Amino acid sequence: MKGLDFEYAYIYGAICPERDCGEAIVIKSIGKEAMQHHLEAISQRIPEGRHGALVMDKAPWHRSLKVPQNITIIHLPSYSPECNPHENIWEYVRGNFLSNPTYKDLDHIVDVCCQAWNYLCQEKGRIASIGSRQWTCIN
Image 1: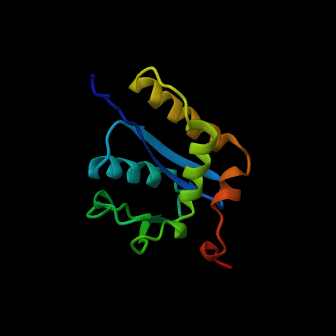
Image 2: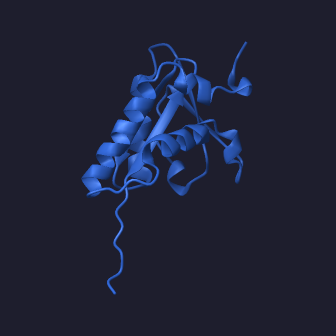
């Protein structure tokens, strides 16, 4: 019996519930280089004169990054994904767009991931609704 071969695509995504928007890259590998590219993409989406706070876990590729001047990284305590509003975004994307389909090939997976993220970002109010947390608001 021949073994199964698997190919993967990864969505590196970030949201801003206040502005109801998101930024993501879909790539075929994970690691520090990919995360660095994602940070630079986030930095470009932050409006002039504003500063972004990026909440993330302590994955090995989340450390020792060159953090752009307009971003502050807030590392979560270990084993606390419930503190990260983005976890609910992933649950929504998986449950509504990515669960149980069959993909033709890796390019098809990447296309579907891009479509899922774009659909999420086009749904007016969805990111704000899922990603807002009282503790993230400054009054």
